[in-house]
Length: 342
View 1 (tube, one colour):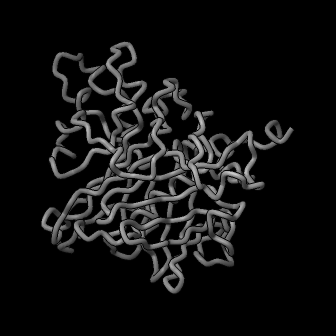
View 2 (tube, helix red, strand yellow):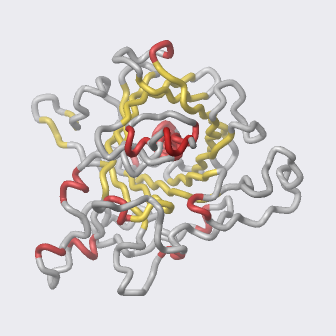
């Protein structure tokens, strides 16, 4: 009954029920949010903008995250509970885990996306006999996205360069009438191990002028690659890359047009757009109308933008095909300290 009365964010442009946090945003316009950082306890709070004043009183709480530093990685626990942010709480919905250098991140969802097969329960897991976990919808760590930042020691290569591989979203989602539900069952990686050793770096995108550096690690898993020509680009995951800023001669700095939503310069600021697969974009035998898998306007459109507006206040604007949870998780990766990217 609720599904018939309340529309999804894609059609209504509004966040209504908690399930909306994991549903794709509207195709136009963007959903405007802001993130409040609390350095004292390493927590982050996502609010929906209800007015132009970016304060807690003028926002609707959506999600929270807490950073936990470990000897070999950093982990962000994401919850719908603002007070108790932990994996044992019923509000836990996912996490973000980084490598030691803070250059690679994996986004994990607590629930299987699009009916994926549940991972086997580990021996000795504290969740094995938990009464809070429904046997029909098992809690776990489902790899839904991977983020990589290009190595940039001492900032010699300019601003940060990042790439996101959305394992649970097909590239065909940006096509007219496309959906975020993948047609290919192998689009979502079958490996759910909490380790970066399972990540392979394919050479499928090495010919790209934007990401041709051998030091920039492609996060595409081999399990999603296919040799079937009839599938083409349809079964490939959506690749997002940050929009490259331009050098402003008068200001002597790198600039991006955030349309007034970002007011403070920061290395954390970014805009994400869809990346064009190089094997399609640079293939000369193809006729002009098929040299790109998607219309140019679909790639030029900013899907997610994040930027600083105050000491501990950041704006986050996202649209289809990302959800609020996915957008928040990507922004959390920008907060992490990157020893080899600054």
